[in-house]
Length: 213
Image 1 (cartoon, helix red, strand yellow):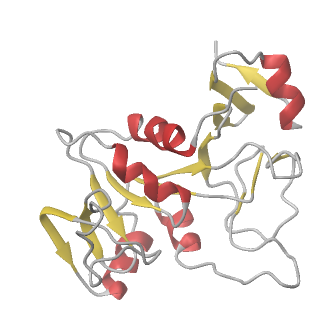
Image 2 (image 1 turned 90 degrees about the horizontal axis):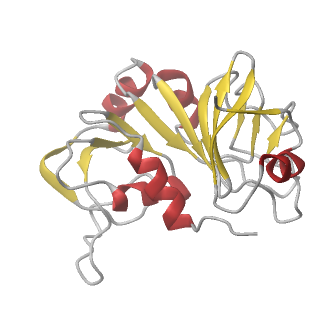
């Protein structure tokens, strides 16, 4: 079965970020979205360690050790970009000043509950970071993740079994198989990868799906 690559997933998310949006890209997979934003569009990337106006990853050899995102990855700064105290950065997040955040996840429930900071395993390292603040403060929360775990279990579930980050915050889910909207009546499939049927996607998901009319 054909699945989207990580870069293809990032490019798909980038398509849905509108002109003029203020966006936070979460640690891990979501940071790749920055590399797929059209240079002719004004989209303002925010990082909770105190950056606004981030650009794509630097070319090899052009890294600046003092210019990193919240995941300690080297980034670039676009003209007009700025640095500020992380306390001010969190105030932006908590004050509702971000239009979107894109987060990774271990699980998302059918009602939009998010679990993305701890698997509950005894040896797991808790690392919530700014995820709770982003999930509550951003106007829309997009999740970007693999559709299934390495063991083949669906990461989209009826009810999260991992510790929750936020309740009912997710509005859209992007996976390597589909794009799904979280609605009051359940999950609606906006897109599927080429070659997969709704019945096949349903079998891999584990919760009821409806195809966008």
